Structures are given as C-alpha cells and as structure tokens.
Image 1 (tube, rainbow, N blue to C red):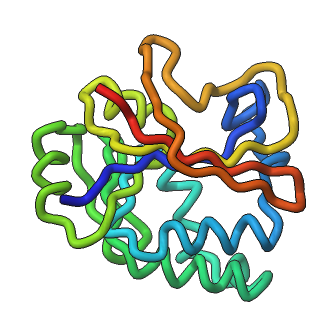
Image 2 (image 1 turned 90 degrees about the vertical axis):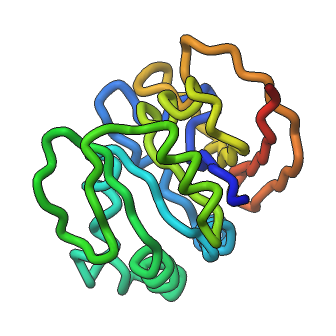
Length: 186
C-alpha cells in the first residue's frame, strides 16, 4: 500500500508563508532541491488544493522556470510525469497534463487511491493536509526547516489537532536547512 506523505518546506517557527503571503525566504539551494527531487522522484501522484496547484503548475506552464538549473529541470520532469489531483470547487480547467479536478476531498477515495497506487502519494498545501490529518490519512510528515523565524503567517501543521509523530530520519544541509521525516502515530 502506498503512503500518503505531507511534505513541506517551512520556517523554523512553523510557517509556510509569512504574514504577507510570501515564501521567498524558503527557496532551497541546489543541495536541498536535489534532495527533495530524490524524495518525490517515484511519486504516484501529487494531491493539491487549488492555490497550491496554481503555484506548482509553473513547473509545466513556464519552460523558463525549469531552465534555471539542472536540478530545476530535473524537478520539472518529475512533476510533469506524475499524476496530479486538484481538489477545488471553483477551478473549472487545468493548464497541465496528467491532472484531474475533484470537487471535494473524499477520504474514502484517497484510501482507495493509497491501496491501488504504485507509488507514494504526496499531499501539498497546509489546508488540504489539515483535512487529510483529520481523516487519519497521512502516514508520514516530511519537513524541511528553513533557518528563519517569520513570526506569523500560514501554519505548516494544523492548529486544531494533536499529532503524535515518531522521528524516522533527519539530515542537516550546508545551508542550515534541516530535513525531518516523521511517521504518524494513531
């Protein structure tokens, strides 16, 4: 059975965006980006809410974005090859291949997807992940912590849930970023 993995880059104080909606402080260097590429290389699918999908779709819709470096081009290939499921009531069409829209997040459908997927599923976006956490669907949490405190903004982890996590892996990067992989506990 595939795992549902919530992977996110966040500030040391637990935010994925600052109070102005910016996340430029979270840009990974080549070492971190390559590490992330290797984590998601075998992804069976990416699950997104509308806003996260619109942010990520640039990896297919703007060829110049992937041309910045070999590691960016590698990620663009990985992202384009994977299935994408976008949960949105307002989005009517998508700009990328291998992408479908689901009007609602159905926990049972995600359980079935986990049971049938050849590769692990990655869920992106704090709001969608919060819904998946509430449904008990997330198996692992992969965080890359940026050595910055932004004070406020959009939280990485849900604030209305108590989550028990067991540390499975860790890695420190030259940039000061730190990778933490946790397995969720019932």
